[in-house]
Structure formats: structure tokens, C-alpha cells
Length: 410
Image 1: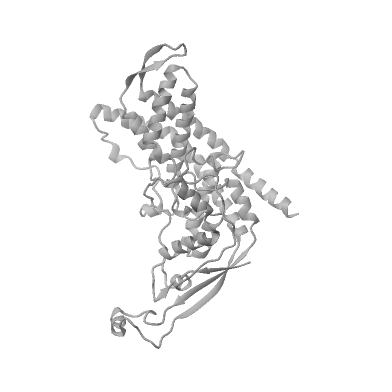
Image 2: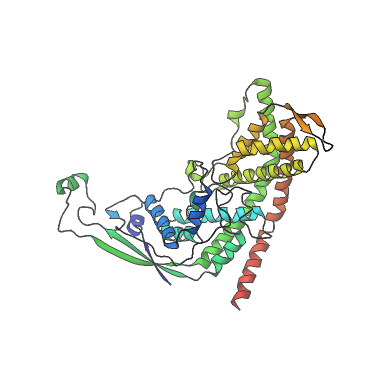
């Protein structure tokens, strides 16, 4: 299979033009659902041009190397119609997973994919990184910091990638000769805007082989390594609860948390946030906390709605707080979304509200946000413990995928 891919990469790599770091911390925006659907339904060739535009944004012109005008990339993949998008309301990392797959394993596949794309960029393999990002319509996932980056189940994504045959990518780039092939600013000024009319542009091309099976193997290895890390990280959820209550009561007593500035983050954030390492463990841990907190809040909301009149009053309050202060749980957002939401609950004063009992009588109910926060923290710790058991089976999942692949090839 032959596909055309145009990008100024070969000479840029030779000159040491490093791509910008992936996973920059995004500015949160609640894009409309129609925009997500439009991305899912965009023709494949347009999606590939988006990936190419992203590649151009990472490569500064150096030594007179520029992307040829009218460069394009023709791809034969059919556009994926996502069952949910990054900004779709609902339970993140849940509505996109396939039946029987846990939300934590779907998130694990997403983060392993993002990590692999970043590693490819660090290795100056822009072509493979763009191909992998565009595979199954996941353009833009390299900078996504959320819970619903995959448009399909994680296991289905792995199986599809492993079954995809090798592809040949033809890369074209233009080395400008008319005053753009390099030299000092003084020389360029002496030549003038028209440059040297005797130097012509030169178009070069080379072939690059994409091996999806090898990418799938690397993705599973990364997935296993990250699962081992998450087995340790999820054990810290209890410590997070303790630190939150310590800070809260310190603020109540002293009007401020004097130790807040002395607290170091558990893990540094992603490399795009500064010189903090070469992995994405900080970003992974942030998303683990976010998903555990959101799942716990949704679980308590369901329990309250099925309870008595006092519980229904809690459900009404929690649902309102999720609507007003919990919107960042969905889609692309920054860091510490879970902490900001719990702080908004803790800062809410207790109140007396009127509630209707099952018998139709009205009564006054004392609503304490502290009680709700305490129950959410207990629930998210239980959820973290359940995820620890699930992540210990990731190696078995990979064995099953390989077995299915082998049986399908017979």
C-alpha cells in the first residue's frame, strides 16, 4: 500500500531541529458536541492534513528547509465514527470502552498511546508519530489531557493496530534555492526579496516504512510498564485523602494552610510543564485521581438518589455541584480537577433545607457538605483498591490479545 506524506522532516532532523514537546498543558475549553462529531466524520484525507499541519507547527524552518506549497497526504483509512468524544457529556473513559472492559484499562491504553507518540517525537520520528496519531481518527490526542481520548475500547484499538498491514509512506520536502537555502542575514539582504534567480527549488523524496505490528508491541510494553506504576500510584489515594483533611482543618484553625507551600507534588508533571523528567507519570497520576474522584461522586449520587428524603437532599446538592463545579471532569482540562471540586464542596457552608418524606410530609434536613466529601473520599479509595486488582491482570490481557491474533492468522 502506497501513501503520500509531505513534511519537511529529513533535513530538519539532520540539522537537529527538535520538535516541540508534546502534551503541553491545555487551556480548558468545553467544545460543542457538534465539533467532536464533525472531527469524527471528517474525511480521512482532511484528518491527515490536520496531522501534517501539526507536524509543520513542530518544525521551525532551518537551513532553508520549508514544506512544499500545496503539500498533501492521501490516506485510505475510513473515518471512525466515535461512540463518544472528548467533550461528550457523561461518564468519561466509560462510554468509549467496549463491553466488559474496565474504564481504568481504557484509560491505560490511551495514556500508553500518548506516551508512545511522545517517545516517537523525542526520537525525531515525526512521520511514524503522525501516522499513529491519525490511526483510527485520533488527531490531537498527543496534547489531550483528559479521560476520553480514545474513540473506541482500548483492547479493540490494540487488536486493530496489530492486525493492520505494513504501509509505505512517501515523504516529499522542498529545499528552497531561490534565496532560501541558507546563509547569513547579510547575504539574504544583499540578494533582496527576489533572491538569486539562478538557484531553483529542489524537491526530494524518500520512502518510510510503517510497521503497525511493531508499534502495537511497543504499545503493549508501555501499557504493562505503566500498569506496574499505577499499581503503586493508586495506593496513594488514601494519603491524598489524609492530606486534604489536614489542609482543610489547618485552614479552619489558622485561616490559612501554612504548610501548603512546603508540600511537594507526589510526581512532577509532564515534561512540557518544565524540566521535570522524561515520563508522564505526573500527568498519569493526576488523571487517576480525577477518574477515581468522578467515579466516586457518581456512585454516591446514585446511592443518594435511591435513599430516603435526607439522601435525596444530598443528591440534589451533589448534582448541582457537579454541574457548576464539576464540568472539568469531562473532556480536556488542566491539572488538579479533583482537588478543585473537593475544595468547592468543603467551602460550601452547611444549611437547612426543606425535604419531602416518602409519606408526603415536609421536614427540615441539615445538609453537611463535609459528610458528602467524607463519603466521596471513602468511595474513591475503594475504587482505587478495585483498580489495583484489575491492573494486576494486564499481562493476561496481552496474552489473550496475542492468542486471538494468532488464531485469526491460522
